[in-house]
Amino acid sequence: MQLTSLLGLLATATLAVGQASNNTTGKLGDARPVRNNPVIGEVWVAKFDSPTVKGFVTAVANTVGVNYTIDVTGLPVDQGPFKYHVHVRAVPSDGNCADTAGHLDSYLRGDSPPCNSAAPQTCEVGDLSGKYGTVTGPSVLKR
Ligand SMILES: *[C@@H]1O[C@H](CO)[C@@H](O)[C@H](O)[C@H]1NC(C)=O
Ligand SMILES: *[C@@H]1O[C@H](CO)[C@@H](O)[C@H](O)[C@H]1NC(C)=O
Ligand SMILES: *[C@@H]1O[C@H](CO)[C@@H](O)[C@H](O)[C@H]1NC(C)=O
Image 1 (cartoon, rainbow, N blue to C red):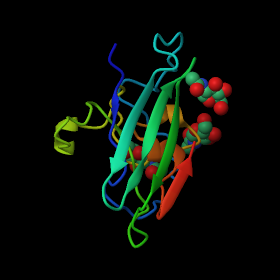
Image 2: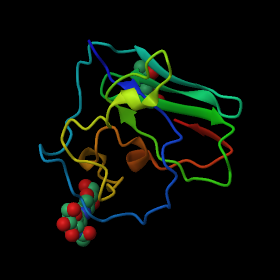
Image 3: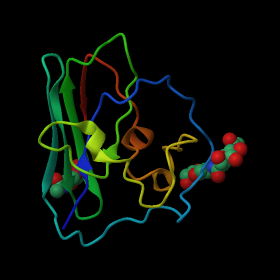
Image 4: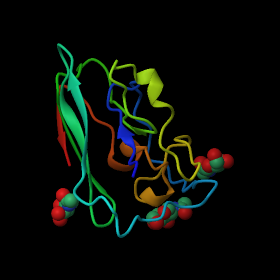
C-alpha cells in the first residue's frame, strides 16, 4: 500500500496571496475523504537535518484523512512565507528532491489559482500550505 511521500518545506518562497474566493476544483471534481483507511496509525516522516534547518513533518493516517504535524526550526527569517506540499514519490536515499515528481494531485487541480482554504476539498490534494496556510521562520510547530 503506497501512501505518498512527503517532501517538505523550502519550496519556493512566495508572497502571500490574498484569500481567493474562487472555488476552482479539480478536473475530476472535489477530493473525497478517504474512509476505512487500511494504514491507520502508519507514520510517514520528512526529516530535515541540514546545518541550519532541522525538524520534521509527519503524516499519520487517521480514520478519515491524515493528521499532519510540522515541527521545524532554522528557517530563514528573511525569506518566505514558505509553501509546502506532498509530492508523488519519496525523497530517494541520495537526497535528490528532483526525483520526487510533482505534487500529489489526484483530482487534477494544480495549485493555481490559489485554493480557498475554507473549501479544502477543492484544493490540490498535496497543496498543504494552500489548505493549512504557509509558514514563516525561524521556527514552526503546526498540527
Ligand atoms: C476562478 O478560477 C478560474 C479558473 O482558473 C478563472 O478562470 C476565473 O477567472 C477565476 N475567478 C475569479 C473570480 O477569480
Ligand atoms: C488525529 O488527530 C485527531 C484530532 O486531534 C485525533 O483525535 C486522532 O486520534 C489523530 N489520529 C491519529 C492516528 O493520530
Ligand atoms: C466556496 O466554498 C465555501 C465553503 O464551501 C463557501 O462558503 C463559499 O460560498 C464558496 N465560494 C464561492 C465563490 O463559491
